[in-house]
Length: 169
Image 1 (cartoon, helix red, strand yellow):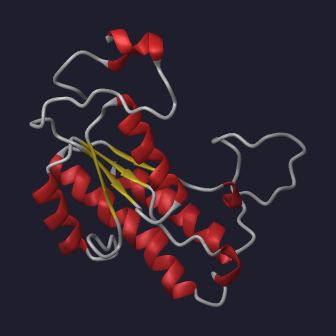
Image 2 (cartoon, one colour):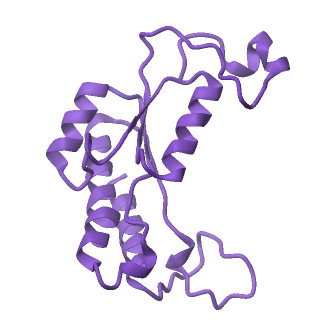
């Protein structure tokens, strides 16, 4: 991930402060592309990269609408990341039933477009699902192998995205 010494091997690891970023690396390093600049998850990943000295680029819908394969390809070509983190999506769970088309575009078409573009370029992709793919009837924590049973449109779109992205990767 880095052209230099990993953060855990650098002397400043012993004086790590949560508010102080790690020393930056050479400017020629390829970044991690983080998609979802307005969300909590996207900003958290950017902060983690900053604290670890990992070059990253955070983009939002204005720069890269993941529902548009042409724009996805253009940004990947321009940024030339070595990995992509998808933290974008439709997050208004209560509105998803009423605005199902918008939810489906953001939560299914978007991740599928990203997965297809990353596959073509041989890039690793990290994307996220939701606990709402499960119906909540178990009296124990759910694990990946449990049978899904979404109870709403939002959960159904996350489940469809999981299945379609896994087929691509």
